[in-house]
Amino acid sequence: MPTPDAELRARIVSGAIEAYRTTDFHRVGPDEVAEHTGVPVAEVSRAFPMWELLVVAVIDRWNNGSRLALWPVAEREGAVAYLRARLEAGITDPALVRLRIAVLSAASNPDHPAAGWFRTQYTRAFEDLTLALVRDVVAAREPRGTSPRHAAEQLLALYEGLQLQAMIRDGAEPLSGFDRAVARMRVGWTAARVDA
Image (cartoon, rainbow, N blue to C red; front, side):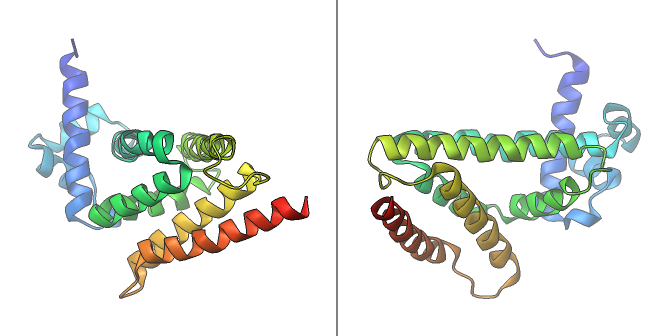
């Protein structure tokens, strides 16, 4: 059974997610989280004495929750279908995409208090995608001879890039762009098999 402090932290994380959904990342602070949570600002600060701890908790629940919820797609249909499903989920919940992009910037700064956690999460996501591609090659969902690691690099770059474009470019169509790019990548993966 959760303790009262654990329940309060969970409630604050939910409030923070709602704050990020309604307000720009850089404008969300303890006041906005308190307002969306319905608790005093002092309670937010007591539960999360460092702001970065709250951001980590938000990413852990929101992003990792979405990732885990969609992972069965990778098991059933493969890595490409999984990333496409995540791209589609980002279209329906753009605030999560904005938060992820902002956090990726923080993760690139080694002096950021949570940089190690963010980097570990990103590395784990990359390794999961690589493993899914290994399974795809074995199951013949992807061409034999495909390098799962190189394919994971390409797919992750495509996924991240299309999310960024969808945030900035008017009229961007990330799903059709994803489908076109993946079709071309697979041609390259097949050519690599022939050349081997």
